[in-house]
Image (tube, rainbow, N blue to C red; front, side, top):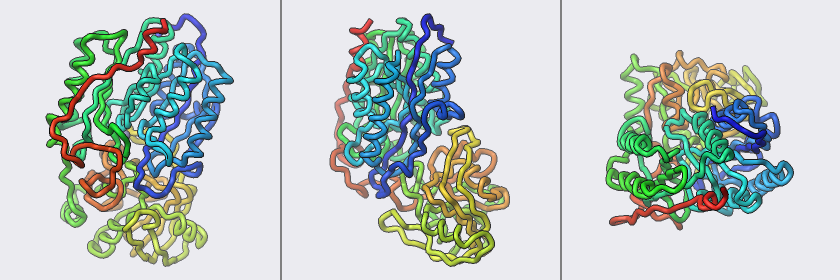
Amino acid sequence: MPEISKPYRILVAAFEHEANRLNPRLADEEIFAVERGQDILKAPAGVLKGLTETLVNAGVTIEPVFSASGGAGGLVDHDFYLRMREELLDAVRRINPDAIGLELHGAMGTTETPDAEGDLLEALRHLVGLTVPIGVGLDLHGHITPRMLDNTDICIACKENPHSDFVECGQKVAELLIEQLEGRLKPVTVSARVPMILPGAGETGSGPLAEIHAKARGYAALHPSIKDISIYNVFRFTDDDEIGQVVTILSNGPSADTPSIAVDLATRFWVERERFKDDLLTVDEVFERVRRSPDERPFAIGDMGDRVAAGAPGDGTILLSAALDGYPGLRGAVPITDPVAAAQAIEAGVGAIVMLSVGAGYTPGFTPRLVTGLVEYVSDGNFIIEGPVGEGAHKTMGPTAVLRVEDRIQVLLTTKPTSAIDPAAFTSQNVVIGDLDFVVVKSGFHFVSNFAGLATPVLVNTPGVGYYRKHQFEFRKAHFWPEHDIASPEIIARQHSVGALTRV
Ligand SMILES: [Zn+2]
């Protein structure tokens, strides 16, 4: 626990969204869950939890502003973003804090800018000057720009995918902020970028990412001045200059070693690039496996193309249709974003038999499905995540109806997109996962942890805007492997946080 010598007041806020520009449904006030003031401290989760609890335990007075959580989805409505930015800046003017601690995602694009975090942090820095430390905890799928790093003192990511260590990330931001306020830390950050995305193999627990993270931990152990090494695997649907894998190293004071370490770690991505591939099963291969493997049931099928966790709308019907048309013996549950159908089912009420066209309201090229079923459950769609990824976070699918089709497939018609990364998305709707052969989730990584012991995870290659395929999507600004032919990228180290050097 870091010791404090003065009664510091630290302003905290969370503003997070991962923006998939291919999703036509804008993220606005309706999509974001916004809490304000002390309410954000009632049941914080993730970075905000680690940040606030560590500060409180150290004796710091917290000044909570807001928590605005958008999850993943379409671009953020720029007017909404500006209103939230202004609210935060107003709070900083009013409170005049000793430091600022933030939870951000790192890939929040708006309808006007692909680098909302850079814009936000630059505005904060202009307002408070160099004497107020700014610390940020991020998702490792951030699009980390020089503007973000130049305008922060502490800018670090979680280290694990699935993200089971957001709380630890928040704790570290709090500890480093206190160390800086106490004069024991003079943060300097260097970064190195390599222009590539990871088409697959994005888990940190195995494969090339596990090796790169192990190397980073080895470097940190050898160099006591290194306080953090963050490794960012850029969100694949951001279109901006300088897209890439980014390594950042935060040291106490300038270090002669960190530039070459950052370049070495970034270079490892390039050297290993052919290993960052997925080998996904087709829809039929997945359902055949479900059919032939009763011992492994229930399965949790990650719908990669319609991944809400990667910003897709969640309105795909391909897996529903495959189960209804091709696999008459299987029982399952399928969430589908469809506010219109959900409202119709809720209006009809529990016990009613309804015929509805469901899905395909947003994603270009998707086909709606006509289903007849029994409305067996309706709710406000609220649930609390129970698994390790996001544990304790309050989530809402919006008004939700469960439609039982052919007495074997439960369709969760949700008003808001839901990634269903947690079993509670189903159990909160009276769906008994253990009675089923499969559930469909709109996630590629995080559900694996949260369904551990309850379902066998499997990923399926489906169309949609949640899964990168070479040359399928238009990139106007971004230039990266494997979308573009890049022979041999120049990987250099940049220094940031230079303001910190002139401060103490
Ligand atoms: Zn992430």
